[in-house]
Length: 202
Image (cartoon, rainbow, N blue to C red; front, side, top):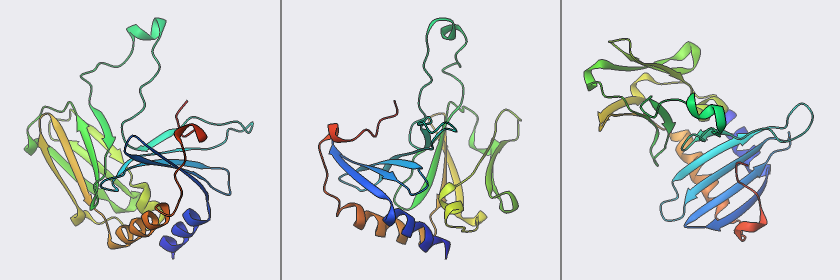
């Protein structure tokens, strides 16, 4: 079963933990050379961020790719200052809760009845549309892909407040169980001082 295969990979990976600023920061190194870095809130055990990186074709470290949490700001200097994206553009990010995968799209001022959020099972993706054709976004749920779990259109919902569209997808019971099992494993790790491992994006 793919869910068990994924939890086995997580358990088999080389893990190092840091406890800092009320967060549990965990670095995973997998047998294929991929790296994953996660941060959890120590009080709630909720996932704050998750990012991945793979080695480049020359064997060096690639850039971190954010899966959960605030997207990394692009470096801005010199000429780039005049062409960077407007701060009023929609910002798409994922921020989960214990029971839901959740995404937020900031800077969307249209009323709630303009939005449509659906799943496309054949493409294993979710799609946000607006009836005024002003916004369109297709995104996947990597957690479901890794565990080869199907998309369920009845699991997805959305709300809109303060110019932010909030999309929720109820986690399948298999994912909830996996996350609980992983957290039990992570709590067994002895946290080190922050300077002992580089989980940063640089």
